[in-house]
Structure formats: structure tokens, C-alpha cells
Length: 258
Image (cartoon, rainbow, N blue to C red):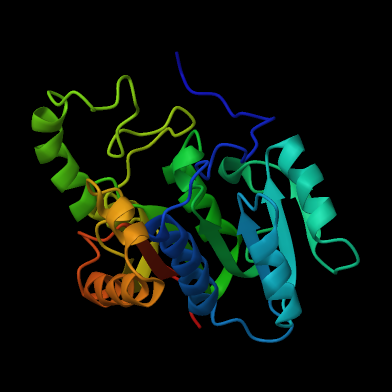
């Protein structure tokens, strides 16, 4: 059966009940890097695809952009309305595979943490190319399912599952969640983006997220020490995006003139 767009998806289960330091760090850094990489200029039109609660769109609007948040889920659009109250962010209910905007009408586009939820990510990337102005930029941030943490987990799991305290019937970190349609890694992301964009910058974020016991160990350490370790791993990840927990990539549409 082909995947279908979930028109009532919500983010209730995105963040686990207990948030360990590595999880909080990854989410915060992904947001920081995505927003920074946009390089927004005052008055530019910026489109947030798969906007969820539209917090990134709201941030970019407050930085002087003309922000538009797009999401297929009625629940998330409703939640976004509550988050952006009294702001200038425009909300549109739609899908990334058929962006309802004129050709060459958008200055910047972002897609943070949502591309692997889409039914057809390659089509979405093509649509981003279609709506961006010549010289415009797209920024995509996505979880890497071939990260160092996932690789270590795959090695450890066959041994760990024999232990008496091993979790039963738990989804493993390197397995895609039920609401995902794609299992992204660095080569796949670069290949799909490179079909329509000249890649200008790629940054890795964080190392060892979801590695066995990493988050629990960090939680036992003094806050300053755990923060220092996370910052060190993040500096290493910036140079090795193929091993990082999250990949952020920016590109300019091919065939465009700035």
C-alpha cells in the first residue's frame, strides 16, 4: 500500500516523556543552525514547509521576513494559529509535493525535521526549486539514520538483547518511526538535493545521540560537564556530517542567476 498524507498528524509523540540532555541538545542545535543558515534579509519572503507549530516561521518574521508556514495537518495548523497570534505569519494548509505558490515567488525556503514524513520527498525538493526565485536558497535539516550513534547501536543491540534488563518490543533508534516514509542518510540527502540545487553548505549537528546509554550517562553528570561534552561532539560533527545525528544542507536552485 502506498503511503498517504496524514492530514491530522500532530507532534504529541515527537518528544519522549523523559528528555535526556542529548535529545534536548539535538533539537535546540537543529533549530539554531537552520535559522542561522537561512541568512534572511529584511522583506524577503520565506516559506517554512512542514511548519508544524510555525515557531520557525514566527522567528523569521520577527527578524524582518515575510513568513509563510505550510503544513498538511489540520491539527498543526490549528496549533500554529495559537502560537503565532498577533503576528504577521501567513498559514497555508498544503503539501510539499504540490506547493501552492507561483514560480519564482519565494526568496528562501526551509524544511526542518519534516522531509522524511512526506510521501514523496524528491517531488518536494523539485517543488522547492520551482517556487524559489533565481538566486534563492533552500535549507533542509533532517535526522541521519546512518549516524555514528545508530551504527554503534546496531553493533551493540545483538549483544544487549540477551541481557535480562533489555527492553522488549521497543522501536530501535535506527529504525524509521511509523510516521516516516524515508530513511535519510548523508549520501541520499546530497543526491536528492543535488538533482535540483547547487549545494553551498552542509553542516553536521551532534554526535552519539541515541547511542547506547549516552543520554543516560550525560544525565548523571554535572550539567556543565555534560554541556561541554555535547559541545565537543557537536564541533566534531560539523566536520563529519555523514556521521552526525542531524544534517543541515543549503542550496541554490540550479540554472538560476543571482
